[in-house]
Length: 424
Image 1 (cartoon, rainbow, N blue to C red):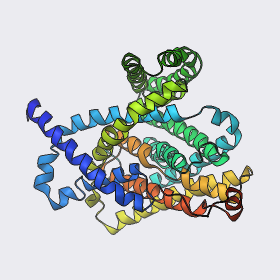
Image 2: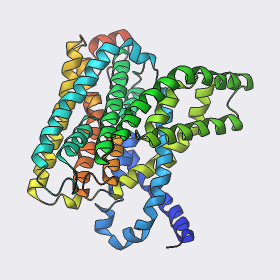
Image 3: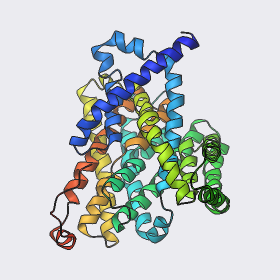
């Protein structure tokens, strides 16, 4: 297929992708699910699991393998911009205010699922259906442990924002713990990739370079970036030139962290947290968020869905493995974070809410799984099993949060409003 044919096909793919995501969205909202969950499900529906099964000719014509490179490249731009915006909304002081509690919840949310993941990986080592040939025992254990430990920080942030609890003790603790959790998971992934490539220098570059980058951006970089905020205030908003310069910085940050082996979204997120607040960030969100969330980000979910083939989980034993992984994911993450929050004096209500929020995997899990698949660490079968786990745990987050964090009679009396859960 020529480049011209690929570009023509790409515009049709975009039309189809956006239409399906918009159709699934209202159904998801009625089930108390955010739009990002609808896009995860839409991606699977557009892949070989449904469209490819029911209409294989149309699926093969609409999504030929030669077009996957374009979809992947554009989806990465959407991911980077989305994580940059998440960083723009994030408040670093949240970690300072709740460091001890957040660190405890984060450590519990990593160690428990990581340990269970390692045990599961040991039980799956002899099976050729899960890991690619040439992947050592240590690589399998580390990757699977990281995949079980990660938290869907963007989904967590979106639920907290939509519930209006961003500035509360619960919201700040969950955001701080989720960010620390994912940072540790990315370091583990960098170590896995270093071992897989038999190069210790890669791990040193990834972990050491990531720490230096984060410290540099959040200290010296943050002071330099204040000039952008002053320019925006002087001009009464972000100009086209200032927006272009900011996007250049975002792409540069993404390139740097990708080059050192951590992954592009980490660089974009850290840069976003260092951006000056006020008019500058307000305009950035106003300009970038609609295009990113409604146009670019859905491409990533579709790309993941096109690699997900539920038909590969075709035996009772594989479905048992899927169920075991799901149970281990929920007990290791949700229960451990709940217990850690209770240990640090959080109320039963808040502790349960933290457990439900931290248990969601979502977007970050899909990013990690795609990296594993692209580097030849896991097979399409294990990729599919883990995608199913990510979708189910993310689907559980909003309804369970509504259940455990519904307004109490005391809070209703203070507010003077009827006790009804907020919709999405």
